[in-house]
Length: 206
Image (cartoon, rainbow, N blue to C red):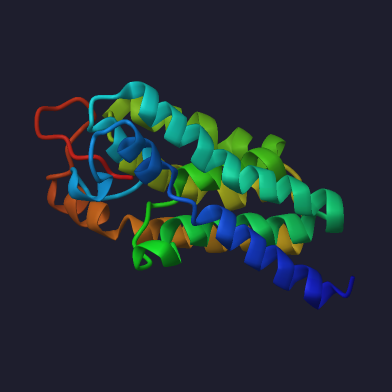
């Protein structure tokens, strides 16, 4: 298959897989209404947690991660790591901007994690995971943890030996997009109103 056609297929399949709104589907199936009318109105796992159903939030987290990871693995096997990166990045975009929901989706953290786990686990995930956990342990602020980890992943992956230009470029792009999808959180962080996890006024960020 010509490279252009392979990449076009990766974008199409990745986007369609990423745009499956698992949080919305699971919450509705559980009879809890429309997740877009709850909390931050996001379809992501953190907002699903606001329903009080930890099982649904965990299922959403896993499924949102898998939808990026599976297409990344599939296209890596079919056409190489570059095609896998393109497919996973497209899944990220599909999650954040699903056509079925008026391009209003989640914030992409879970899909980013799923992509890292399947494309560059010993470089990207090995950097991002501990940093996220460390910042969260110190601050209990999920959005801040995600933002710091997103900054660290591309250079960290490079320092650990990642040299594929498509993979590195994709990581930079997705880290920038994480900042874009968290722009409201950034505003609250700057003015000191972003709540910590578990606080009475906590609002989910994804």
